[in-house]
Image (cartoon, rainbow, N blue to C red):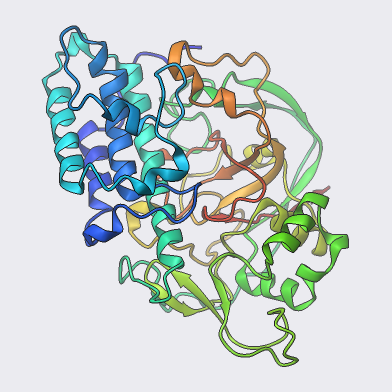
Length: 433
């Protein structure tokens, strides 16, 4: 499958500058640390996104000399066709190149990209690279939050990011919007769209081809599950009731000792002293503006598929399929809290009808990440971008407060394993009509 050759809606200079703007205020010590194998250091994100343009655009030109002969090895992520690479879990060991050298690498590649003549520009690949960099902008934020969240000092990334804004208010009642059974058009068809539906001028190959699917009648909750509602699940013994959990989920809860979403903490001693964290005390939440009290009206965030599914069962509902979610979102404006606002924390529900469909939190679905009928990956090494991960992953829809606004669309298919919690992932309920 090929992407249509059109000028990108994204500006190369703007996207590259946005990545570096996310690093403003960081100390040099913040760039190189790696908190777990699934996370990467800030420095690695800066270098890898640069490696993408060097490897897939500049290196295709006759006579181009790589900035450094070993960077292809150090900053390749998972492209087997490109060659060997440094171990993912050991990216934090790369004290060299220095931050200054990585920034020099970015400047070199940017200068080479600016020098390209229009006839030399592989527009499809550059557009893919820009959306790839936007993905890494979100990963940079989520990985940095995980790193800071492990620090007993509760470091502040941006003082205004998730400070109490006074907008928490009362929790909006949870209502339902029904949809009739119908054969729906699912996926991106390549057309221009300014709302939620067609994916605009760009879509990843895993969003195509558009195809028809029978979607039985269903109802979707008008907003995301709140932190206050999830606290009630915990208080009702949610993490101690195996009947609510998928088998793998219950095994994970026992093995990892989960008693609450990631970044929640019980600050006061539990009343009965059993330490299970669901019977009293004051809960606090680590955010990118530091630690603060939990706000009941905000969406619960940083939960796994296992936790989302257990909560849905406890609430007498279920998680939506990705086709149900797309059916509901297709004609909605792409509006919400995005990375552009610099808040980096989900906001409470506001407005009528279906809200929080975009921004705030990625929303778990019960759908396995699998190819659409007729799917074909891109040719060459770029075919490894999406297709080879279509196993043991679940689809999330929407976008989060760390997603760039121009990166969100109704057809977007995010995917993670069921136990992933460090992304801004939340819960939207569904039920049979």
